[in-house]
Image (tube, rainbow, N blue to C red):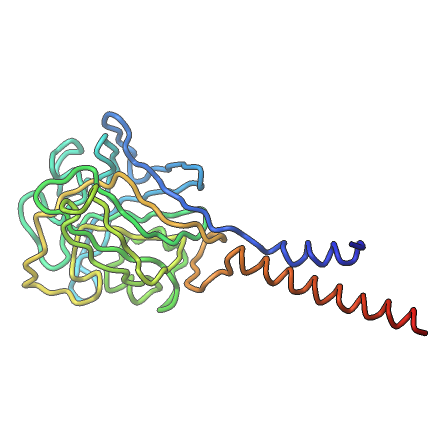
Length: 275
């Protein structure tokens, strides 16, 4: 193989990036108070988890705005304590919940949430709970930028769910009764959305902008997240909802280009010999 053909093959293979399975575990023995956020590492990279709760002033559509919460980690996973949840150690309100320490404020009041900010784009496909009380229903959003734009998607302070959906966040799904699923794991994101920013909260109908004040599923949800998993799709600081060629496809393309080049080279050699 001459130098030109070798360079052609290397050029064809250079964009190839294999998708890698990724997971992050949040079970730290003992009680840890991280403040408003914590950073967690895995072989796939880092994720910064920021705690929020809809305990702020009333915003768009008459719904409460997100305010900063307190993130904690236990052997059962991470949880969020809001300003209305009592002390950091107060169980079960130190978990993700949609209860203001005693009173449900339908349809979106006192909903604990966390924004997971990855250092690259992730196709998130599973969320696991390690501890729960009562029920364990969750809502999931991802920042895609398709419906608007936020300068800092990781900071949702002062925003309502309605604001988020109008400014680049996309509803992924509501997933019910995680406590009743194998290993407490919900398979999510069937459309394979990929993003660097994911929001997971206790269930609310406002996550898909319906905001039903008579929703019988709202309330009595208390859970801690012990693991999330997905596939890395490359890139960082943004989102990607398109497909990325698999390594096998790129190899076939590279082989085809090289074969075409060698064929042309052989024909040129034959022409030179015949001349």
